[in-house]
Amino acid sequence: MRRPAAFEARAEAFGKSMEAMSAEMEAAATQADKAKAATDLAAIQARYDSEAASFAAEVQTFALAQGAPAEQVAAAVERIKSVPAMVRAEIAAKTAPAPQ
Image 1 (tube, rainbow, N blue to C red):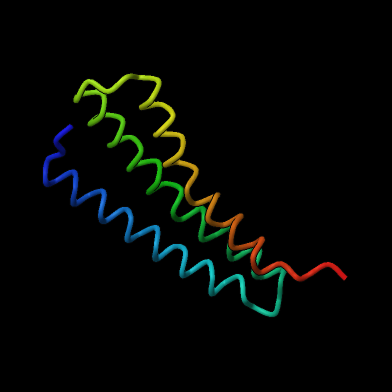
Image 2: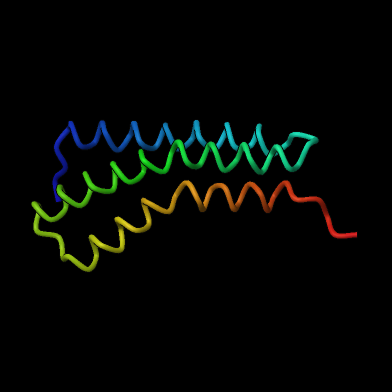
């Protein structure tokens, strides 16, 4: 399936945005105050959730217009929407204090 340049550019911008989100989350998670870190991680995720949902809608529109199977598109849309939460969970797990 050929993807127009505008869509390629949007996908690249989304990828860069998710990288920036990850860096923000990494910085927030390393705070000494773990309660504040958790609050900050939630706030960062909330800011990026809407961007992920917006990009997912664009992917859905584009993919369906290209004739992609609806089931595959739905699965891809859900994966895209879940990226901020998945990144948050991974970072939180990496920075959690070790059990004593």
